[in-house]
Image 1 (tube, helix red, strand yellow):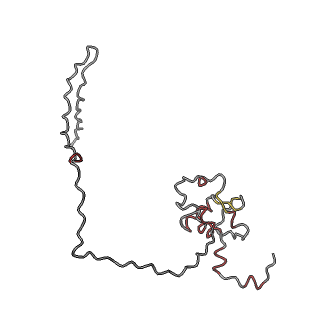
Image 2: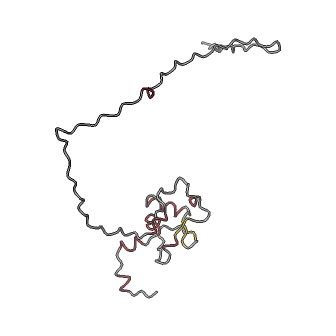
Image 3: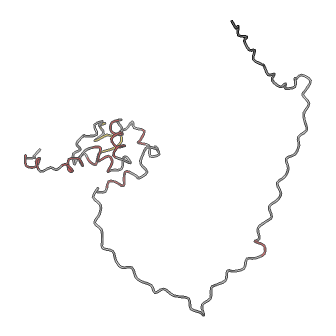
Length: 173
């Protein structure tokens, strides 16, 4: 730990916050939002160097940054897990800094050809007569099924009887 007091005092807030585990989990694509990253960490789904870390404010060293993974027992290890972000996390191993923009090249300009009076629109090719849509057949009526007489051993289904509620007579004084 060859840091001097001047090195520590030169740190700004943004640098310190960018080293937090919560920030790195979000930036590496393990979660969709910083809030989800915090939840994943506190619920024990994130490991650094194979060790489960449950503190979102854990300061990740430069050597540990590439060793952030889901824990072995986490269901998020499955690629098809619904809580897993849609972007593959392996693409995020690129530097977090966006690449420098290249100056735009001017596209080659094509002269726009205007149709003159001699130009005519091409007519669509006539379709052969055999390609006409087939007529839709009328929907068949369902066949009436004959009523089956109950066999001698079975009783016909009876309609349930309705029971009227008996009203209690109130005794008046």
